[in-house]
Image (cartoon, rainbow, N blue to C red; front, side, top):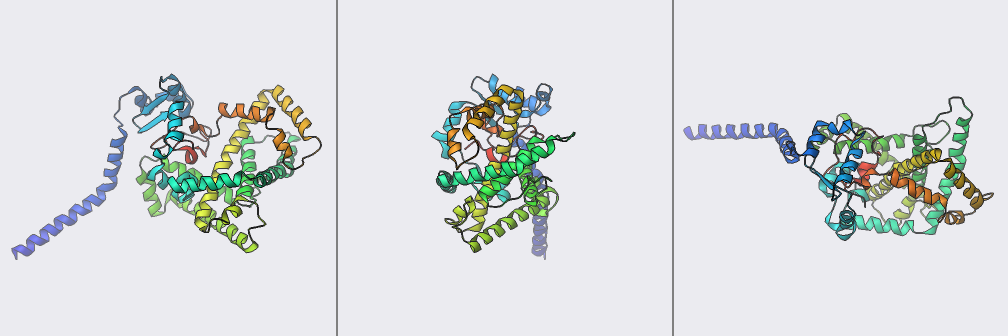
Length: 402
């Protein structure tokens, strides 16, 4: 009898211990996470970050980082409170991106954050899978036929949508346009046609909201928010319970997946030989449709906001420098003449004013801010609104520019 009661007592103790462990494990994980971040660090940089005193002198976090890097003799800083190292040292960058590239993988924490959205796309994998996609993309993008196809898409988008839209607003009294929004629509239409062979028609005169574009934006934003959470447990629990932002994320991914599957189904039924888009070309090599979806979504992510941000900054600079605008217009009139004929005109611009001015504008207003600041470990919280950092900067460059 005593033996039986002793056994029951030990069982009860074990049950209580396990129950307590389950209740405390999220809090314990959060405590250990905060412990790792060294929130008690009293160095000058960490104190400024934690107290937000940097905001008194700088509009956003990236400007403060740029100031710190400029003042650092090694062009490298450590933010212990975040567990981050940020560098603008050319030697460091060359070492990470070229000399010992394989030694700096994105790692599992990063891949988990973007896994639902990007899957096994090039921005979310390492090693052989990354190398395979890079080589496959390089091979296809190097073909003159794909360049001609891209040129034709952009030409049609400009002539049939962008210019008519701008003209329709130019004669109005309140003819103001959000230029960045217009360029986002322009780049999304173009990159979708180039990558998927799908036209979302975002740049119609009525400026419609495409369900695919809305879902794509939402998935991008929530993926970035995951990295800015205090602990990964926050978004993981929300995903498990299917609540809040993670519920919206699930619905956005469902819309993206359904569209991708439908596009691939139609392409297989119609035959791949007549299609010139990237998806059709990749489908001739890769059979796994989920893998194909991941590859092409990464292309969409790479091309959308980067192009829109570059165009917005470029035209803003042109507005401030009318002499450059006049020189570009004169050269365009000279090179293009009365019309376009294939991609010969593209070649004619390679050593001219236009690419020169674009190459000058991009370093001043980088399309992906973190190309200059390579973040390891995790993205820093507090980056703020979209005006402070391009919305595509996080998923593309969290681990450093490739």
